Image 1 (cartoon, helix red, strand yellow):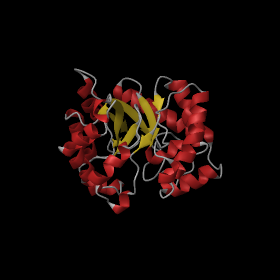
Image 2 (image 1 turned 90 degrees about the vertical axis):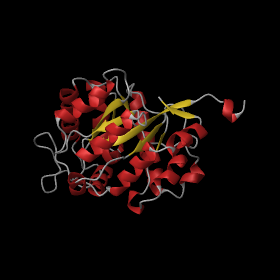
Image 3 (image 1 turned 90 degrees about the horizontal axis):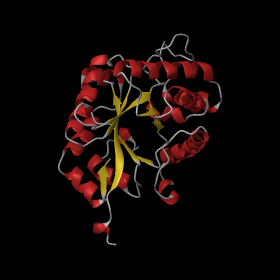
Image 4 (image 1 turned 180 degrees about the horizontal axis):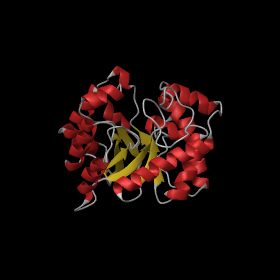
Length: 282
């Protein structure tokens, strides 16, 4: 069978960070309406997230299901916990990512406090959307960290067992990942995460792609096709589209690159790239 005759493989293209800022929410909804996204992951522990944002997103599924809506568990700065008594904190907020990773690797976190915070964010999602999430993952991949993953998976098993959980293992061969330390770390962390999820009867995606060094602001249009190489059916590709506004600048260092991602995903080249890889949104 020739490549052109090969059947289409369906995958998830997930826009992370819905709820972070109005401009991010607007860009994600725009792409959903255009049929350029089929999943988005919602941050409920942000100052900008309100029930009206949940309604605006949910209404896009009113006639037919356009988008899977997940919970983006948030446990890093500059955001603050939703539960009382959470620790550790730095200046009243979650620790920055490096500090959170270090504490997790040294087993210095409190699994009970983690579970309460994750459960509180999950309940906030249910209250806002009137239903449970289709899937659950973590902002900055924090759900893969030691200690965090145990609390995370326990809460999902107890409160949202039908949701699938995101693992971040890559489909690309090992030799092609050796030059990407971040990909290797995610692969290692995801191995243990997948094993624990399987033992608990929780579903995971078969593969993941989309991570890159945002600080270098690469050409997203040139980068995106690489995410699709070797991607199996039901794999997840992460993206971060958005429009820059004051709230985004205040809370996140990833700003104008979000607009570059939106421009590519909204443009004419995107469907041609999918067709060339024999891929289609689920």
